[in-house]
Image (cartoon, rainbow, N blue to C red; front, side):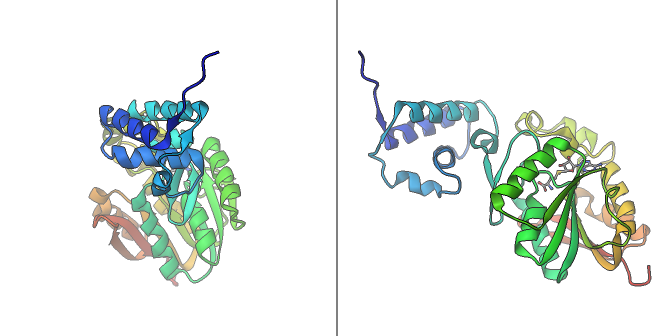
Length: 287
Ligand SMILES: C[S@@+](CC[C@H](N)C(=O)[O-])C[C@H]1O[C@@H](n2cnc3c(N)ncnc32)[C@H](O)[C@@H]1O
């Protein structure tokens, strides 16, 4: 019988890094560690992987790690390979069923927390549930997460269980259809906002892996967003807030559109990279 060879963790991680470099992955060292830590234990800091670099790794675990590295080196998103991603304080499951949460979306949650003291908030186009779960866990809110995609809602429900957040209700529907008139203190959304042309030109590392429904906003990028701006006036109560992620190139256009529909106090805010990516507006007390 031939004994199966074991490798040390340090040797395996170095192999992972060189395979990722060969695959053109920019942050190869960091991602080699991330794959290890996410496969080993969700939420463990990647640096922990080096704590015992001399530890032997069983052949089965080494094979699992190298299979994951191969997928990443072939272009699959890191979050799909490991099945995990981070958003604010949460570790969330991620896969093909929904958009992978982006770091630039995290600031939208801060804008709502700073303005809406309590109450009922809807997260329209909830995807993984990242915005809705953050609001329900960080603020005194009752949150309704809406999505048209049953697949995304199934993933959001898994994330709700993993995050152990009680205050998020998930509902399938088209934009504001499932929401009652004048029922919300705030409506938050990161809707699909790329033009169809921009969507078609997306890098395959995004387009081949993430749902078109999450990204393609129609010929002018405003098909879903424009409808949402109009419909939200029915469901946000007087004095309530609208908080949207918008395309940085079309912030001004979207703001003018919102003002034309009667939204007041329309302002644009920068994301963590300094791009005007968030639109805030209020439904005036007068109507
Ligand atoms: C850009 S993704 C945002 C996902 C998540 N909120 C985030 O920030 O990562 C847009 C989401 O809107 C959903 N969506 C698209 N059109 C919709 C519609 N008409 N009604 C409800 N949800 C819709 C998509 O399924 C997708 O989950």
